[in-house]
Length: 331
Image (cartoon, rainbow, N blue to C red; front, top):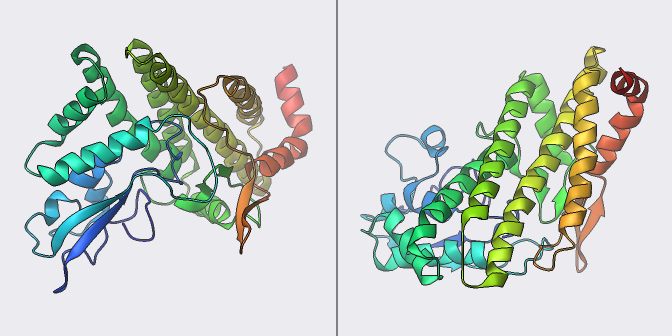
């Protein structure tokens, strides 16, 4: 897609244009969307189109691999199966990246095959019995929706670089992508719509977690990873929802003078509880490494270094609104 491997960015316009042969590169472990620490099934969206493409793509232009099948320029795909980004989260099992890669490779060999059949073949190949494959398929499909609602936003008004690798941005000078996104949402009156979508994402992750509890697998270590990584995804989303709620309502209240103390107090409690739950989850041996509450900047020859991010912003609003929040909590 345009810009990098982001949701809510349009399909790459140069594909299918020109006289030279083209190989489409696809990232299967995406640094803006968890890096395989939780399910994030992008293969179906790349093959058939993502749900947001109806808004993003001009009529008649290709928006998926299937749309390119009749283009003489298309000569293959290249899967970036692992890698992407600079740091964590670091995973103990490649399952979610592997599923993306295997589905894409099978499609490349049999592009006429419906994607659902390819998914079923891959799950069978990975040892999932027939009775567990429907739940796995639903889980995978829901993961794509969860990431759209909970990380990038379906409208395209949140800069997808607000989070990357193991870092969360904040409303800070050192975190320009989230800062610009917050400004946009405040200016366009989209705060409540954004918070509603974050609520939806948490609900989707709860369903994913429920599905994971019903799935069986002969490999005990892999089964533990499936369940832990789905819980990881739910807690990840709870951190995001609570952090964005504090920041959006906090900045909105700062500017308007009307403080929604009750919702801010609830979000602050949710934020701290989610981090506590996440740290407890990290004690499981199969758990991926955790995110940080800082953002990052790239330093030549040194990689990513931390900068103030979500944690600094939440702490600032918590201190700023402490009397109102305390009164609300006491009431």
